[in-house]
Amino acid sequence: MKLESLIIRNKEVFEVWNTKLNQMFFTDFSLPHQVFKKEYRHYMFGEFDFLMYDVGWEKIRRMAQITNDSFVIMGVLDPHPQKYYYKEFGYYNWLKLPCNLKGAQYIDVLEAYPKDSLADSIMYNSSIIVWFPPSKEWIVVGDRDYGISILAIKDDSELKDNLTSFSAWRALNDDVLSWISLNFDDELLYKEFIENILKNYSNN
Image (cartoon, rainbow, N blue to C red; front, side):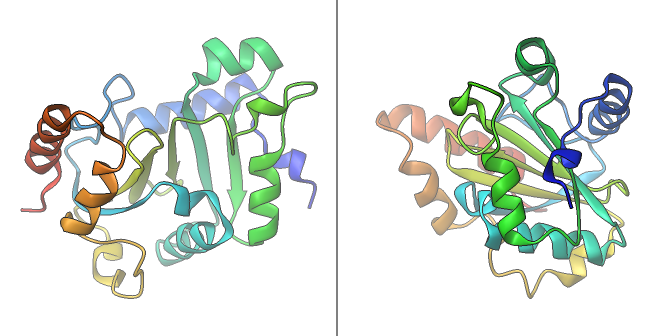
């Protein structure tokens, strides 16, 4: 498998997947606001860094298999895929990842960088990332600045009943709050952030 073939370069292809993303996700909002559309109201939390390595890809891949998806779209939202990445490099910081992709290949494609721009690999220049399958049964957003990822599952998805084996994901608890706290120096800002996270992402 040529890893370059996983990169989304075509504008029309990008628009197809960006349209699907907008059916699931409010791209003009960011955490701690509610970023998921109303059909996605079951939430689990994980660490951002975990999803950037082979062990994280294994969890993403397995979720896609449970929902009978053969691939996952991984899209960077910050830096902007069009205004920055496509404008500068002629392709998008979005990937179409088949479920048979090996962990080492996942890391390799994240570490791939535009010519003469080592700092612009997805591994190192990505503040907000989404992962979602074509079925749109679930979506993950990862926010590097806050150190967390949130898995949002569609209300009618069978994935909700198959999460017991996914120890990397957990409900919003003290462990998750401790991950977030490491990214704040200002206690007042931290408390305000947590209040909004609890309001928007506590499972009912």
